Length: 211
Image (cartoon, rainbow, N blue to C red; front, side, top):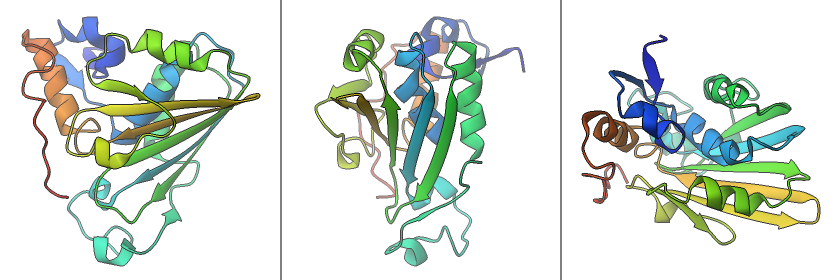
């Protein structure tokens, strides 16, 4: 395991350029980390996170709770406070100094693809500036006004992030394609870096199946 480089290009770009083995991040782990890593220098106390994912996040195997026809008109929480990607995300976040109590509640949404993460924080000064600085040279991270939308990222390697502050409260909103930036296209991005290709090579064209 020590020989593997964690495949989050926005954080490990230089290490990935010489990587021989890459551990590609999970879909929710990608969203959680991109939402919080820009705030690594701040003293975060309590990090409340909710996330929603589509049926394709459960893979090809059919079950009562993951089969699209049975969840098409439903919305529910699952693996409350014990989703496997929480531990994955925490490993990197703790290593860069993000402390505090993290609670993550994932939800099964009546959609096929896409992940939407909402992070609620208190007393985070100049939050948007932290994101602008961190992702200034990240080709696939886009900062948006107000809320991102899944229709703008599905089928792509883009991650759209909104940062909204009012009074003491700050909300970070992240939208990404679980099959793209949350899986396959992020693997291509990592491969590009490791093999000396352009980081964005082959990643400008949308993959639209399943819809």
